[in-house]
Image (cartoon, rainbow, N blue to C red; front, side, top):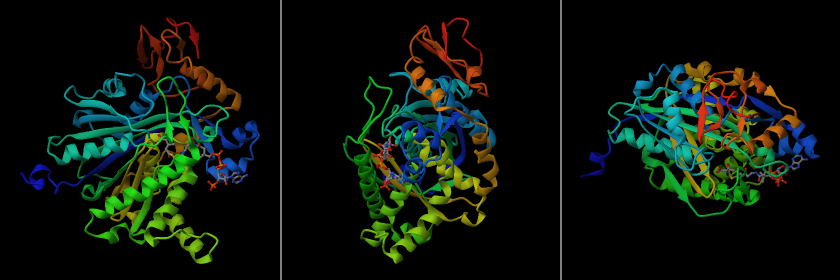
Amino acid sequence: MTADRLTNSNIRVGIDAMGFSGAQCYINMVDLATARGVDPAKFIVGIGQKQMSVATPCEDTVSMAALAGRKALEAFDIDPSEIGTLIIGTETGIDHSKPATAYVHELLGLPSNCRQFETKHACYGATAALTSAADWISSGRARGRKALIIASDIARYGINTPGEPTQGAGAVAMVVSENPRLFELDMQCVGDYSSQVMDFWRPLYSKYAFADGHYSIECYLEALAHSLKDAQSVSEDLSLFKPENLAACFYHVPFVKMARKAHTCFLEQHIDRKLDLKDITDKEMFTKSYGELTAPWLSINAQVGNIYTGSLFLSMIDFVSQNNRELENRNISIFSYGSGCGASFMLARVVEGAMDYAQALDPRADLEKRRKLTIEEYEKIVALAEDIDMNDGLAPDPARWSLKGNIFYLGTHNHSRQYGPQSMRGQLQRAG
Ligand code: HMG
């Protein structure tokens, strides 16, 4: 059987709907810098972050995923019965065995013939899910149904570590379908890269990630160069990858400054030499390219922080929410990196009419409603995090943190995680 008969390459497949739901509290990076005795310019300019979302004990991978999934379905008028696959990409799973999808499947009322599973590869997990869903549709196995892919994570490095200013919490949901309304993926020339590196990891016994921070930046850039080359090697038209032919370049954004480093590396692959930002011509070229293709879509990341699997897709939400109609029908590049490490580089097209969803996708109003925490409150939440997954331990109380909505993590009782609006506090002992 030929490859053409195995996969229907004529099917247009891609991202049909998106939705973001983040943690409802945040801290200000100036406050954090002051508390740590660091020059605030290091966090604001050097790292590029203004604020950082903080998950309270009532918000976890499942609750954020369910809220993001519900937003995507409702905003794009998709009935749950249309979903045939649910995949959650996460590196902050809530059980060694049971996938987060089992809970989200129930919370969203998805059909019983909808398969569901979780994928893990650090920040790359949701990209693996996205491309698998696109393959599922292209193969014909979807039978006209859509896939719901959710990237949901809480980034935790711990107090006073170098990674502390690069935490965050949130989920991005994407519906993948034929004839997508937002981004059509070019599945013919996806470039991949894998290498076993100890740049960032989280052992089974730890809630906190370990990172060799500066080395992780090198690994990320190495993976970008290799996966770009791999994508180019299978493309019939190399001009598609030229920065001047792209409407936007999206990168995994663990912190905003990393996207700037990534775009520098991307340009260097095209000119086949290092950029010298002290040279006026190189500086002008970089500033124009970064200012047009990447920087405009990083303002939401700067307020939310690293949401691991969802960070890349959050900047794509930022892109659509800005309603630049002249960027429809243009190509974009997408680079996904997961520590450990695995990466993909791919191209996609902004579908005509995508910007009709600018308002529906814009998360700015929700970000404004977040509650600002003092550093003392944030540190209290970090301390509570040790306890929230214990059996009959803490009974998280949404009212204590002024949370809105109706999907919360309510603690673990009888060794089962509890979700929903009904408080279990009467049955449990200590409230957090
Ligand atoms: P650090 O060592 O504390 O910071 O950690 P630094 O000394 O490298 O400074 C950071 C930047 O601030 C530098 O800029 C400084 O010059 C600048 P750069 O040279 O990089 O352009 N700076 C200042 N700027 C203005 N005014 C000042 C000032 N002082 C310094 N006064 C690091 C930084 C990112 C390493 C740390 O936060 C960390 O370890 N983070 C976690 C790891 C990480 O995010 N790695 C990114 C690549 S790996 C990845 O993306 C995957 C990941 O998301 C996980 C996954 O896949 O699941 C992490």
